[in-house]
Amino acid sequence: LSSLNEALDICYETNVVRLSRILRDRQGRVEVAYDHGVIRAGALELPICEMEFELISGPLESIFTLGKRWQQKLGLLLDARSKAERGDRLAQLDKTLAALDAIGDQASESKRIEAISSYWAPRPVAMIAIDPNANAEQALRTVTAECLDQIIRNSAIIAGVDTEDRYADMHAEHVHQLRVGIRRLRSAWSFFNGLTELPALEKRNEIKAYFAQLGGARDDDVLRELILPILRKAGQPPLVLDKPIEESDAGATVRSIGYQSWLIDMLASTVLAAKTGAATSNATPAAAAVPQENSLEHTLSKKLKKWDRKVVAEGVTLPTLEMEARHALRKRAKRLRYALQFCESLLPERRLGPYKKSLARVQNILGEMNDLIVARERFVGLRDTQPSAWFACGWITSRLDALTTEATHAFKELSQTHRPWR
Image (cartoon, rainbow, N blue to C red; front, top):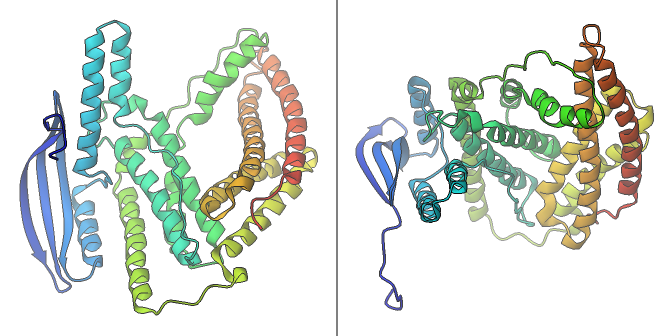
């Protein structure tokens, strides 16, 4: 500190009133703290209203058992962000807004709104680093932890933590990233199935219902914001769509007692399994080097090979597949891409790029085809009352034929691309 040329200044500060109690039961003691106040950075303040559960003594299960009991009674919302994390981001936002105020032009106002909304930016996919010396159980735990973090953080913002729904109309990307997190987690369960024990079937099935509720009006948005503008450029005659599909209330879904309980259960199973695994590892003498054929890289590569062969085998016959089979192929290709992302840290980087690029091209084409198929079904329902809908149906059919050819070539290219696994 003595080497600093400038005086230290406050970055952010927390000003809270804390009410705490230590609760005891037969298992142990847990401190429950209720914090109410603000985080302050420059001219900005962020309200704090949160409860923390900290283990004092006894088994770690105690904080999850108690936390879930209080969550179900009071409707608490799970949030992964610490006060320090929120404070740092608030300080950065204060500097950004101060710089925009100094400019003072009209364009800076839209940048202010963008900067403020970015404080609650969606949590995207993050890289996963799996220990090459880990076993399948530990690898799944690492993957699960990253997927859960994406799910929990996006859920908290959608639920209105910090915002009280002031930015509810800007949650479309949060919902998308939340659904990506859920898809990734379910893909991980499929990928590690047969390699290690999975969460209880009841918990794996429970998230399906919430995933469906979070679907919202994505297909309607794609139709109105992407497909219709393209149709108009192609010469689409005037066409009036039926009323927009009502978006499901994602906020109500993620605030529900059942959904928040599911989050706590999944977090508990991951944390408790990690603690058990660490205790076992510490109590066991260092193991001998694992043979290559038994290594984690070899085990996961075998699963990647299996999924890859199925996707490619079906892909090169795409023109002969029925619509339902094409839809299933699209989901398998997406699942393969997620699995590859899980394993990236274990695979040679120089061989990873070309395969990822080829697989991404396949998935993008299949995704566009799916969007067009859904849109065509919508236009088919309008043909009796609006003859101009025939143009849309015909254009989409023609485009699907072209995409089928593109996809076939993309699958052939994928089949000829070197695989990143040994």
